[in-house]
Length: 164
Image 1: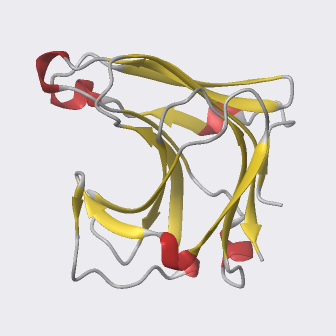
Image 2: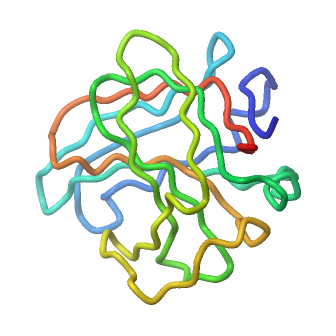
């Protein structure tokens, strides 16, 4: 198991990076309550915006990724589409590997993503010549919403684990 939401300091490990970095007005945050994490906020399309994200450093679980076949998420959604994003030392700072998912509304489900499902992107543009993801080089994980829909969102996460 990599990340659960039962430790008191888990909330402090997450931080938001929203479209305000480029003039947008979206906002988000990450809170831990009742044993799950909540990536919540509001997407605004004003001022050229349209995305919100949170990130977390692996803090010790990156070793468990080296032998994994992918990543599994136990999530509950709100009908919107999200991205799981992984930063890797094999890509530049503005780039990440992503997989897109639309979790079920109203009930928990576990989604498993093999490494082959991740695609390299830089600011939303696919990188066709990027190397395949190397699990041992992952140094950050996060969630992003950029579904071109204004309004509130909330993704609940109860577990992030190495897929096998």
